[in-house]
Length: 277
Image: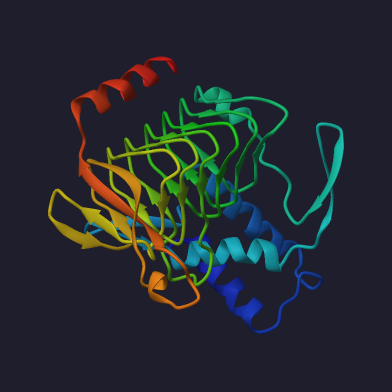
């Protein structure tokens, strides 16, 4: 167990025992600052893949929660505008050093977020505490990357995409977008859903554990994840609600259909990638 992990665990026990933001002293705040810096450097992550499955690092998620529970709201300034929060925004000088880009006036990166080398963040976009954005990944305009969300390398998040955050329960793995994934504009990925590597997801697709994925490759229905190397899109199937006396006509509910990635789809993705180089 690292010293930082041990310090966060001890602080969590004190917080669980009644420690307040008002009573937290310099030592506690030093631990929280060191924790945020480690997140920003990519030295620790809220979740990791072990034995083929994504698992939450419980102590890291507790450290994120402590940064809300043991800090008081105060005034900060960004771009000449005062705002009030428990955390300042992230310093971004290290992004330049690693070849990453973020456009001004609307690209908001909160403290404790990791942004990899050669990543691109277009305004307006928001990356929350504990999020991990991998090397070469594009976070497009009007995108949100939620708390503790794990975004892999060479991922494309289309415009107006929402990647949800999962902080509680601390044992639950957050949303994961694996390497090489392309999400079309307007996609929503929530509640710990895992998008398998090198998959291509059509625009406006909703991926959440409550919606079935009809995997035509393996001919099975799965929940909570999209297998690797799939082309996925939203479709609507009949719902039992349509049988109700108060409901006239048919009723439909969303489902996701997953097939093989077709070569023409890959070519279109490669052409779009070329525009970012």
